[in-house]
Image 1: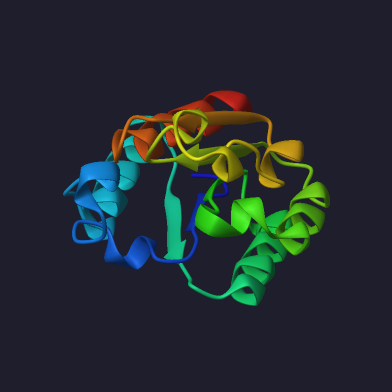
Image 2: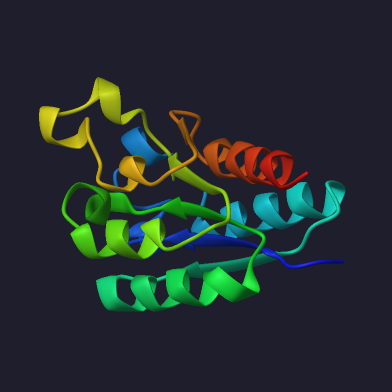
Length: 145
């Protein structure tokens, strides 16, 4: 197998399953990891799956992905709306970047409708709950082919 697909999740996603389940669903981040790994394996890829509540840690992982990954899936969570640092790190990548959201930001509050991450993303998957991640991994694998 070649380089893995990095799947990065931002702040508060460690609380999936208990945090606002009416918006984000009842599946946990561990459930999401299992979905991503299974989908990636079926497509001939491995996954590096990580979550952090800290912006700088996410930037470090994005920089690491420059050399170590074949593609990047990122759910930046709230940092998507605030972090120019994430945007700048993502713009340094030459690999496909798929932005991922559990909910549909376009159907939520106005401040959630635009993200800095979208400016650097190859594509966006949103609104399918935990399956958004699975679909994003599939899209990333397709972009690598």
